Amino acid sequence: MGTTKSKYVIANAMLVGVGRNAGVIPRGYLVVDGRRIVEVGEGSPPADVGEDVMDLSGRMVIPGLINCHNHVAMSILRGVGTDLNLQRWLKEAIWPIEEHLTKDDVFWGALLSISEMALGGITAIADMYFYMEEVARAAAIVGVRAFLSQGLVGGNRSKWWHTFFATRALWRKWNGAAEGKIKVFLGPHAVYTCPPPWLRKATQLARRLNSPLQIHLSETAEEVEECYSKHGMSPIALYYHNDGKAIKTLAAHCVHLSSEDIELLRKFDEIHVVHCPWSNLYLGSGIAPVTELLEAGVSVCLGTDGPASSSMDMFETMRLAALLQKGKKQRADACTARQAFLMATVNGAAALGLDTGFLAPGLEADLVIVDLDRPSLQPMADPIAALVYEGSAELVRDVMIAGEWVVRDRRLVRLAEHTITLEQIQEQVRERHRRAVWERNT
Ligand SMILES: [Zn+2]
Image (cartoon, rainbow, N blue to C red):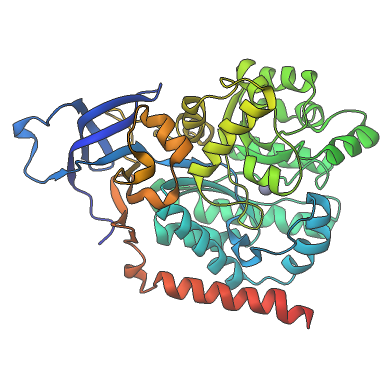
């Protein structure tokens, strides 16, 4: 059974992401006991460590990759509304279809994306959508950590109260479920869909439940302009002054920021900017000022955004995060490989409040085993640069979450316990996509 916990000894592996500063041990060992890493060291493991030693010569162990922004169920809508900017994409392509999605659509869509991400070395996700109990169920089946928000949309009273009560129901049923791997966050969608009075209700509930909050902020120039004309201030300022500054917040996107916005972000009690470079490029939103945020000391982590506007590959996401800043600033050190790697690991763990993100004794064992036997990875002068500039989800062989194997030899271990296969999931999503997207149009 997938829930069985035991002791694992990994030997002869390259260890990358050792300690908070992404240290590298070219040949080392790592011992996992129960949910936690208990030893990390150079060379061979001590002789008395136990008999089940896994020889990982030619492989690398890294901490689990953390995807801090998603809408996983949107795999149902993959490829819908291509080449439209965000606002047209939402209004013309996405929202009209989403209105008709069923709970089962959300479940299967979520299961496909979460499966894809686990196979690609992603061990924790933050997600916002509707029918979130279905997303929780899918996450529990695959075995990943999931930080889930019912998207709260204000303006329309009945819709608001419906989503507000759905948040409370989700909290009661799922917060702390799946051996603590599932947590519930508050999720006001954005300042343009959740005006100030409603936003305050969300922050009040966040405070009452002692829950962090996730929100989209300053994703497009249009959003910022509209906020200035309606409220006389930027989305960051509006959120900050609307009770947001004292709430632990994951702010997705933050593409269009003034220097005053960056100063406000620096002054928040605890804010984590979730940089989503793939989606920001795909939807024509822009390039976030990541270099300026890092230089100001703002915590920046990475997200893909949903599969209808982004690849689910966190290696590509790290690569884009680094390359975009280099090109934008015309400075090769504007975002280094190490900074991109830390955003996907250490900073992601801080954003989600996880006791993971690097390899060290005492931390929860969220590990990814990467195949190094690839032409593109030879020779490897700098292992972190190799992962960021040449890595891909395809390299991932095995994934452990909280000391439990979730992926072994590129197969999802826990699906079998639920008598589900990856082929069935793909078939379900293809069929549901056909019904939701194509039959609706005929
Ligand atoms: Zn989003």
